[in-house]
Image 1 (tube, rainbow, N blue to C red):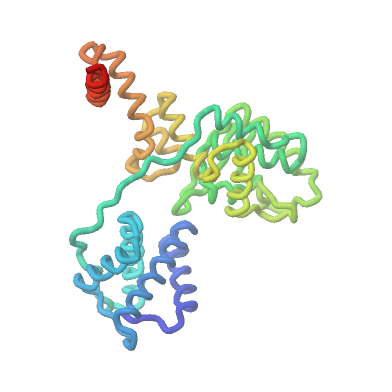
Image 2: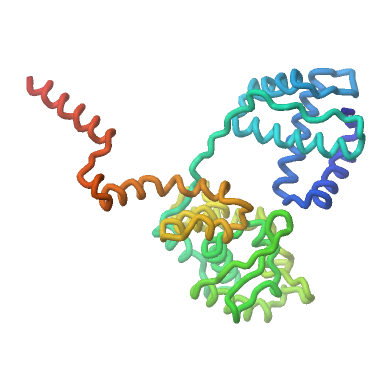
Length: 327
């Protein structure tokens, strides 16, 4: 493969390919571009004076070792490998002589971490922080309520137009990853807030007119960005005394976790989240394991009165320590 001399021009062409031909989301595009930059840095370090770089199993192994030496986790290395695979696919569309992606041997094992989510009291506290008596406070209350009540991604929220909201059916049409459209539902509280907000939005001097009017606007009348909503959520989280790392996706995690806690099926939560398969949704089962274990102990006839092995070990150690001290 050829190492691009003009990286800016290359990234512009690559971005167009990802956005038009692959129809991937903006966050994925940013990750792929970051991965491409990382690989070009490695390629230049390996062959400083060469513009041609051959991707073989050996060089791929050296790339993984190079990433490891920079202190990257297995998950981060796996993301870089995925970005490289996408890069090679694009280069093959530009030059048929580009080598195929090597078969990965000994691919880093990724570990899915349990997502951060808020408890129901924390959610209630957060929802009460915006001053819904003001226009901007009402906007913020709608943002937090929709994020938690529907589980939409922040990138989906920012793209919602006024025309996407159907108050009669209490639904909102959102465009997810891969430009896939789905419908999410508004609960009573969310419906009331959005209804009040739309009335005030209609009379707002800053609200731009037209067919594609954004639902959530900034003080200049433009569409709110992902970063702006992140700042809004973090601000209210700080006021509520909640974990400062709270972000819009935390509310999505909380939605999924609380839905499963409430008895919703994995497939129904998958559809509401806009996941293509239940594989991505299964990560939300982790916080429910201990609850499921407790329900099993209390309900199953063969498990009643059963003490967890860990609890037995702790009890045994405490008893032994007490006996030793008495002796």
